[in-house]
Image 1 (tube, one colour):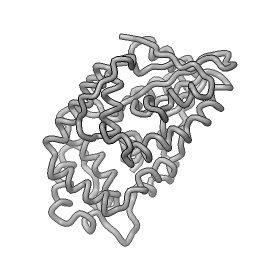
Image 2: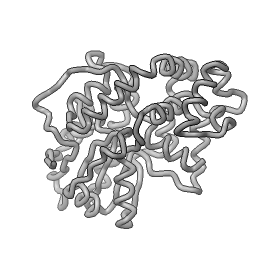
Image 3: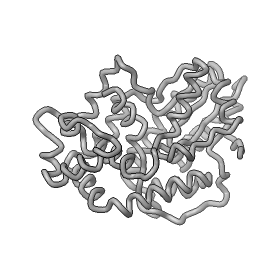
Length: 290
């Protein structure tokens, strides 16, 4: 159960939407950004991750490792689960509802068959999972490679250096973002996902390729569903969370160097973390690496 919870926490908010060719040449091709100025004695760093990438494509250049290992603390969107964590219940349906009730016997069987090969889950556990989270597990299982998150690599480095890992939001706050989507909508989205697996896989592969190329602007516009940049996804999954995170980030960086790693789509936009920190008087500068 703990392993399942950790996968859900790391992958839960992966945006996979229609591909956009939108590109802003003024956005630097880097995911690493330095926070300085405004009275800080030591800089802290932001890093834009992807929650889904082939393990073989993970790159951890020396400068990135250096910024992680020199941090006093590492902050992810949500702290990794541990064995004593009781928050797993947030990912499950109420006892009077099952996944099969929501999507029907035929689609439930398809989910089970897809997961059986790569991500086997006990049927009683699968029956209890909310449809949104099942969709994330299907994404992982559908790819031809072993898919992990960039957060996994960062966690590994931080643990090796005994650096404390924390979260910008707690498990309930993280789960509430998903729970704002009504269950019938989650169920319908899962059915659409199952009916369109091939184009979705191609879309995910495109997303991963853009990440490898450090195309931050294209990844951002892809996540917000350009040209419909006033989507509920942008408001609920990005903007509102960014606004809640920034006061926390500001408080944390006052006490020493910190390293923040979260989905790269949170970096850009008027209500992106970079711009919100600049509005508070901080200098946020790109750090380039190969």
